[in-house]
Length: 134
Image 1 (cartoon, rainbow, N blue to C red):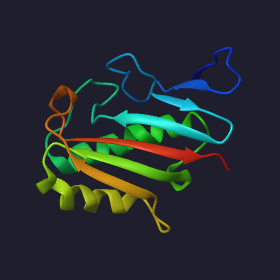
Image 2 (image 1 turned 180 degrees about the vertical axis):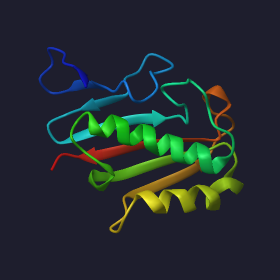
Image 3 (image 1 turned 30 degrees about the vertical axis):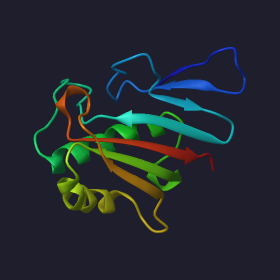
Image 4 (image 1 turned 90 degrees about the vertical axis):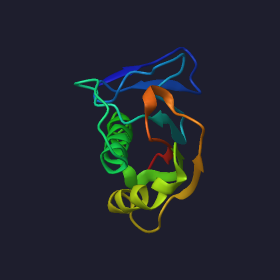
């Protein structure tokens, strides 16, 4: 577990070696006293650097990456209160949803889902979450 603490007491960076490194100038997550804000997780395997094929496998990998980041804060998917799902093709919504509902339980987090023109690394899905501390 690697948590980088900055001088700012209001927020701190959360870093997981079990999720892919940020592909730009942003943090995997920022934690505050109340919540953890997890940046959009692409479907990249942190060990191999490979993106799986197909929306089902990519959704599984993105959720696995979200879980890895949350675990650094002692949280899990049951602590998630809001998700945002970005899809490169909204026609993949139902297939994504089938995977999503296996990982989240009622009461489900609030959620937005959007089709976007493109995602980094040619991904089909990217998922970001907000989780609250217990």
